[in-house]
Length: 113
Image (cartoon, rainbow, N blue to C red; front, side, top):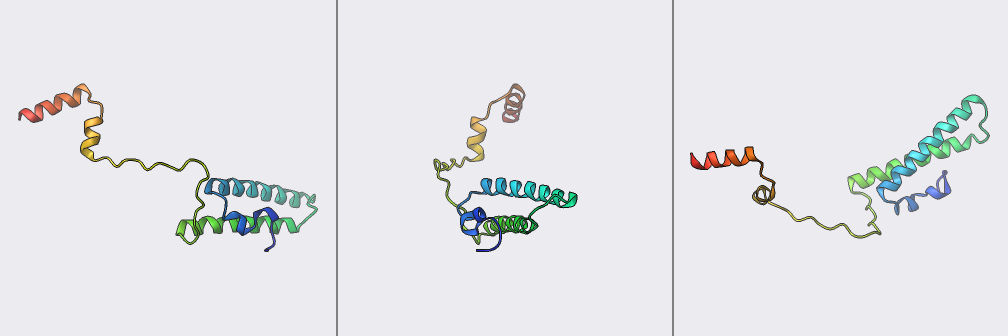
């Protein structure tokens, strides 16, 4: 395994959904900010942790980009599967759209002409 957090191995990142990856990315960036702040004030105890967090961030970005390009598969949601919406035509949308007085008056005028 590469240097970094034990809980953020690339095999485990494959099982995360994109939302969870963004949450982990946010946490890692906050941790990196805090570590840099500690380093600047001389309070940092483990300098190797800076490197590990940077690698975790890079690993998350890599997984997200590979999913975007279609290199890695996005895991299927465990919750209820998303239902495919019906495709509606413009005519069907127009028939179901609420009619206002102005629109109705214009339709009547165009039919008469």
